[in-house]
Amino acid sequence: MSPPVFSRRIQVTQHDAALIWPILLLCTAYTLLMGVAGVWVIDLEATGWYIALGMVAWLALFALWLVGLVVVVRAWLWLEARWLKPGERRPKPFNESVQVDVDESGLSVQGLGHVDWIDVLTFEGIPDSDNYLIVHTRPFKKLMLTVPVDDLVPALNHYLSLRACPTPTATGVLQSRAMVFCWRCFLAWIAAGYALAGAAAIALLLNASDAGFLKTMVGLCVVVPLAAWLVWFIPFSQVSTFAPSRVRAFELDGVQLRRTDGSWQADLRQARISRRRASGLGYEFSFLAIRPLTGKNLDLMLEGGADQDALLDALNDRALLPLTNPEL
Image 1 (cartoon, rainbow, N blue to C red):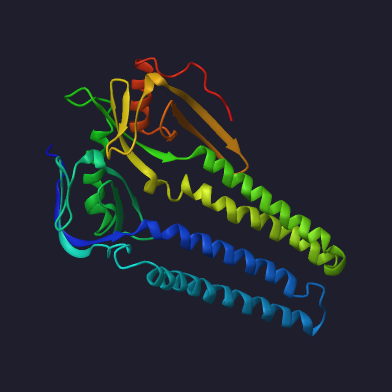
Image 2 (spheres, one colour; image 1 turned 60 degrees about the horizontal axis):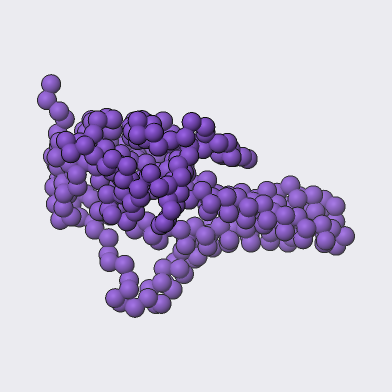
């Protein structure tokens, strides 16, 4: 049976992922402020007609919140365009109807170029849509392809599964993919969530005599958890919703591990390597922690994929993994 081949002219849109995080942070802060305003402005102890007025006020705040989200996003785009000099601004993302070819050599997009399969990092669909597919690549970042999913996914799955096979290349170099994240940053966000929730709880209790018992209890049960969760959304989304954007390609050449883009490499004989399991309120996952003597630390998410299993098997074969796996 011949391998699947895809060749068609489709719409290709390049997304600018660098714009997402500042907007998410601004929207998170704005949502928290609106939640606090909703608790303190509306009288929860009202009776009679004041209850109906309170419901109208809640609806007005909700509408204001929706409009405010749009204003926040537009304001950030406007400020970014005014602050950055023309030479510092990001180039306009690619958005054209072009020829796209998928075969054993890789992914080719007319107008952008060719990508080998090791640099096609992963792909994901869009919820409730059968005509859009997002493909993550190393050189071109995130590409949204407008195409029936069932026409393209079989070809992508076929070649990516071949690349995920734990067989080294002809040169003896093992190629693998893994999701990169920062464990210490993850812990810092978790701690920041607890700190913000604690600060909100203290502020509510200090003003309990003025706010009243009911409003204080609503604040403790709603605003405090919301404050923590809005902060925790950032690290949780990095290892779940936005995980595909953090997948990177690696090569293991003997005991040398390096990223295919050349931004990181280390001699694993001179690095501390451990396989860890982290768990807490709202999260549980395994990761590989690599701590070289010099250079940046590296944390790789391990979720049982063929790429990760191949990398772990290779590390075990080279006696680079410790026998014990610490729990965090």
